[in-house]
Amino acid sequence: EAGVTQSPTHLIKTRGQQATLRCSPISGHTSVYWYQQALGLGLQFLLWYDEGEERNRGNFPPRFSGRQFPNYSSELNVNALELEDSALYLCASSLVIGVLTGELFFGEGSRLTVL
Amino acid sequence: QKEVEQNSGPLSVPEGAIASLNCTYSDRGSQSFFWYRQYSGKSPELIMFIYSNGDKEDGRFTAQLNKASQYVSLLIRDSQPSDSATYLCAVTPAPYYNQGGKLIFGQGTELSVKP
Image (cartoon, chains in turn brown, purple):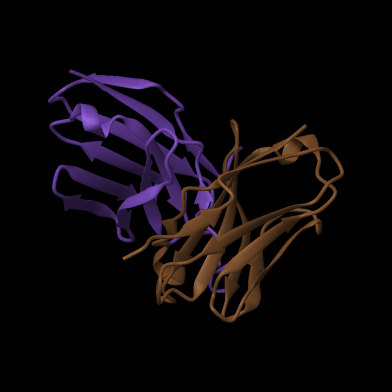
């Protein structure tokens, strides 16, 4: 069974540009989560999507946005990139019960570098 | 005070020894506690979760929870070089019913098991 897949693996952008990251959850998982892992800061919760709706959002500015498609895949958009947005962006998926159990299955991540 | 605190390490133990990883959390209402393992350059994977005070054993791993002291630990018995990784402690915020999908992670403890 395929795990959570993310693309691109690496992305280099300059300040002010926009970045789009993509995620495909494990088959059968309806919930998709986005986390940012910046150097020295640990994993920070960004967004949770379930059944196409944004269910919860972390303490990030509105220029971080995303959506979930009918096939449960998701994309994360970061507008007006800033240097501090450089980080590993991890997507995770879970079954509905995973929302309660915290059992998240993570992808390998997309590393965004902002120059 | 950080919401979830871990010693960053590195924690170095000899092969065959017991590795003890510790985590404290600030939200007394947290209900669920998790240990994720992250190998260098890889995504986090769930290895243990615990909800109730006391010990929970799974193979060589034992999770310990003390809600009164707001303390979670992970013991790894008979440590192997393959256990060398960063161990992330995560908790669910309270009240979880309206913060679904969000885990609060510590910064992780780097464990090195020497042959």
